[in-house]
Image (cartoon, rainbow, N blue to C red; front, top):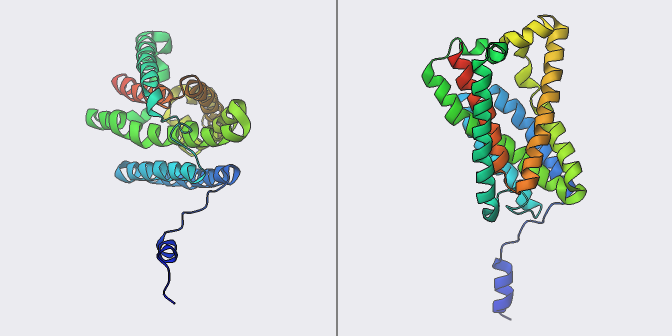
Length: 248
């Protein structure tokens, strides 16, 4: 007996992948972030940018696999205008703070960084307007205030989402801060050149970035958009490069 058309259609229809639970999705996200942290720390330049873009897409895929939406990641089109307004205001405020800090003798030393000594203007511009927005801001905001925050929020609310996201954001900065004590004279003058000093510099970085993560999460919560924390995140990093280079 010939097969029915309905049977043939059913056999040809591709099976959709089963959705993963929210908690397993959080575990997958953390695993991806651990691997990404090692990769981003190892690869710089073009490979670092490619890694950041791939990781960002992969994490959004995990969110989608768990049944999440663009709104869960803070990327809903209807909230983009509000997020963009916040971002512009925050960028302006950070610019004013950096300008004042660079002009005042009492705070000018905080911007000194030996890593800028070998850089020229072109490299600084590349870092401020390409590497920072793509290699740092894009991947970190999608990871911590987008996917991770959105997943934990679904099962634990804003407070737990902020705590988990901010703690992991602080730990994300362990590897980049390993040589901070020798790179920044202001830090070195406080902690010194010892092993203990290096450990204190790393611990301080983790605590500082975790606290910054709380602020970024609050911006995400208030605006329902990643654009607000993205704007602040970019301004803090990019203006740091520009001012540090000009004051070297």
